[in-house]
Image (spheres, rainbow, N blue to C red):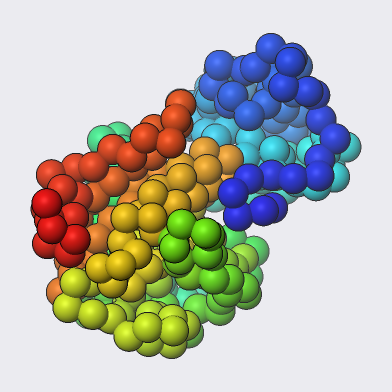
Length: 313
């Protein structure tokens, strides 16, 4: 997948009617995907009710289709690869219905070695189970998860109750996070003077590296952090973009990063945020988003203040 979108796939053309829930799929493609999901559950003896963005079992368990739709959309094999992708996702979903089995099967120390912090969208329905973490990035929840060979299991507040002190668990998770593998590092530049670094990887915790951003910048960036801070974007779980702020290139870099974040958020599995954030002294503030219908940049109050601080006005 290209950093600004999908390339090279032979699919329904843009002239075909688009699905309302997943606009990057045609109506016919989305209908086929939902049939594949229904049949995959049926093949495991589970009857589901299919809705536009999710399926629901008779017992009330819900399986969202957003990540799966994005995975299929970005698979270069096109629709011929979708049955296998759907089968894999449904298989993992069914195995996770009873909660993380690793908490019961693994020794305590092995559980701790697999513990990582993970960002998920801050949806109100998730607060009861996953609202236990510190408030770090606006609009996102920071949760603890187990990195297992075949799955990544997010831990609810109930799961953590007998595991240990939450602060100590988070510190252990951050320690493990520092060893997360980055598979690809690119530097993006254009004629406007915009520049930023992009880290990518198969790990579900690449975006989580924002929690140790100063260390990441020193390791991968050409410029050391400055007193003006760092711009950062977390389009989805497999990607982190950052820009060390210097007065001469803040405006073009912010514009390009906002478009980059919006594109990655729209079409990728594990979507997190289409916004650009400002990291300063360890805190995050949302500063900008891109208007999808144009190249217009929407600044928050914090974004306006950042512009005044760095470039004046």
